[in-house]
Image 1 (spheres, rainbow, N blue to C red):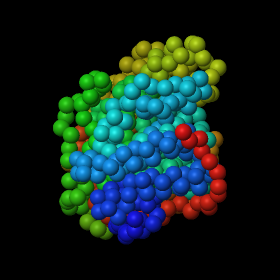
Image 2 (cartoon, rainbow, N blue to C red):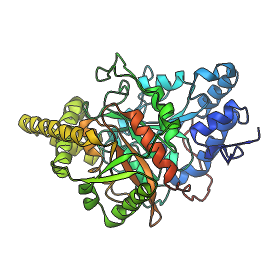
Image 3 (cartoon, rainbow, N blue to C red):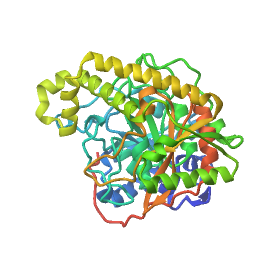
Image 4 (tube, rainbow, N blue to C red):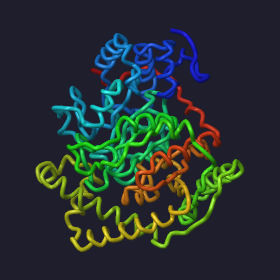
Length: 465
């Protein structure tokens, strides 16, 4: 098929965002099989450089694409009709192994889809395969490369999801965040990521790290795409007692009607703690928003952000130790060094410290609720630094506070510094994703978009079924 959509040639369908591709499919200027073949060809060309995929289900994705093309009359009821999606390799998907980066689990086949995956399929999405995660979604560096510079980390633990979206191998991918594992890799790779309110998206069928901190969420290249996929994923699930009956918002309507410029509260503590080049770039982005009508106010936190990050770390250690006690006792030698240290250290943390960390979280939560009472959102750099070398997954201190207290957070590219992306992080109130999307769409319309990372093409292959 030939044609264009949103100014992007359908001859390069892998360049399309999910929403652009969906509109082209609806207009019949792009076929579902054509789209899937395009992203598979892109993976063939780019994967040897980026190393974002654990496995790609080529045969299954093409078979599903052909099936959907025969069901075109059902398109209107399925908001992700024909859109290929990558899954971080902690999400169960029937017919595909879930390894969580753990060697002994290479052949681990789940009996059913995770709730999030089942909802994607029901919405018409095509599960393309599994993307690389750090082991058990913690901090041991992955093999994945940052598409902007192969010597830099893509961040963790949603490494493959962010890198694959940035490298145009997939328009959408799912990640998860316990400390900073959606927002940080999205920022380091120059794309968008959303950590929803805790309890908005089911964790059922996802390998856990810390039960009170784990947040599933999407990574994409537009605010509209984040809103579209959240509308599919959100909602109560009887299999996950953490999910709430709070109303699922009309997130796409929020994107289509962003409203007036927002009132943003800049958290100066984080700007002062960031590397100077990052702080300057994000400050420049806020100045541009102000010139377009946003009101930027300033505040400092009463609670030391370092204390908040320490509280998150303590809770994560203890809960990971409890979750992994049996497996670690049996297979400790198969654990990666940092994951093993997390589990073994967590087992030594006194209960009094865990309780104290919980109290710090309660105090910080109350402080943030008060700060948000008179503004639309909080703003800060997504990460303190640009993507560092691949010996680390980066600095999680700027994302961990919002995982600790469960507030929704979104990162949007704020520009390039020395050829590497940095992100602007936007925080809204609990269950305020509609407001967050309105703000993010307004920001997206003001800040200059990033170009695609420039990758040379080389032949190669990735494990495919």
